[in-house]
Structure formats: structure tokens, C-alpha cells
Length: 244
Picture 1 (cartoon, rainbow, N blue to C red):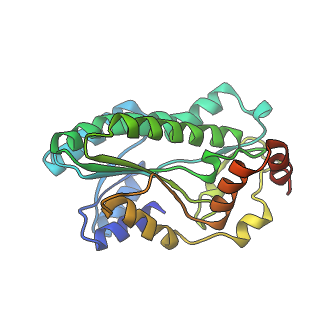
Picture 2: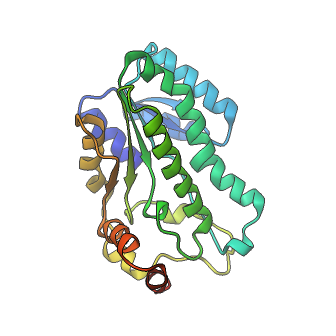
């Protein structure tokens, strides 16, 4: 979804600076015409260096930040170690927070900006086997809500993307705690999956509209689960979430 977004925003006329963890991917991005920096959200030194490089590239002027990096650690919570949980939060939460804090002053200096965070349907619904990932996305939601309130009079807008099932390589790259018993997506998820391109109109709205939404729920799964959580008793919702 990140690469699709990079091409989409560039086609809209934005100057897009991409990031990735590997040198090989950096070369691929540059071959596609992007400005690119190495960035590993698990490493504070990498975040600091990338932020400094971005400041130099942009000459200290930055309009938007799309925090889209993330991965999932899947498995029953009783099988997930502290180290695995820390690694889940290191990328999805701590790195996101640290990068935002480095780049936020560039937006504050010009009195406007957009920060768009990729959350998940797991940012408000937790299911068996996805507790670690859901906890990290719940944290992203909380950080975004607090930051939005703290910046309410600065001209900087915060939005959350809550996609639901999108057809990407995310599921293939999930870190499965138990290799003999993989956590699999429910069949209904595949029926309502959308393509990365389907997210782009919402991303455009978040970055360009005068009044961007606080939350963008993309798929039918994300929308229906949001209403289900608000309207149904928790015991009823549990029964739905236990359906395989």
C-alpha cells in the first residue's frame, strides 16, 4: 500500500520522499524516480539520520507525513514473549512516535501540515491470535487522538486510516509465533478484501481536503465492525469474533 500511495501522491503533484529498510529496495525506489531515504523504525539512530536527511532534502519545509510502516506478530498471547511484544511495538508504535516527533517541528514552523497514520480494523477490534498486533494499533489510535487534541490550534491535521482487509503482502510477511499452527485470516475477510488502489481516494481526502476526517474506514469489514462494536453487547460481539 505504501508504494501505491507514493505513486498516487506523486501523480497528484506532491513531492514524495519515500523510505525503506533495505539498500536493495532503496535502489528500486530511486529507479522508479523517487527520492528515497533508508529508515529502520526499530533503530533510533536510523530514525534520527533519516529525519536529518529529510530536513536537508526539503530545506526544512515539510507538509505531510504518512506513517504507513508496520508488521504483525501473530499467535496466542500466552505464546508471545516480552521480546516479541516489544519488537511489535518498536516498529508499529515507538518508531512511528519517534519519527513524528523529529519531523513535527518542520510543520509547526510553517503553521500547517497533515499527519496520516495507518491503523487497522484491529485498532478497535481485537481477535484471537492477533492480540499483539491489535494492541499496537490500539496504541496508534490513542497516540493519534491525543496528538490531534494537542495540535488543535496549530493548523496540523491528524487522520487515521483504518483499512480492514486489503490485498497486499502483509499477511505473507506476518511473523507467526507458532510455525506449526499459523493464525489464518477468516474466510469472510477474503470476500470483502479491496485493492490498495481503493484506499487512495481516502488518502487524497486526508492530505488535500480543508477538513479531513479523523478516521477513514475503508472496507465493509472495517465499517461493519465499527458499528457492531458501538451497538452490540460485548458478549454478542465476542460470539461474532470467534466465528472462523
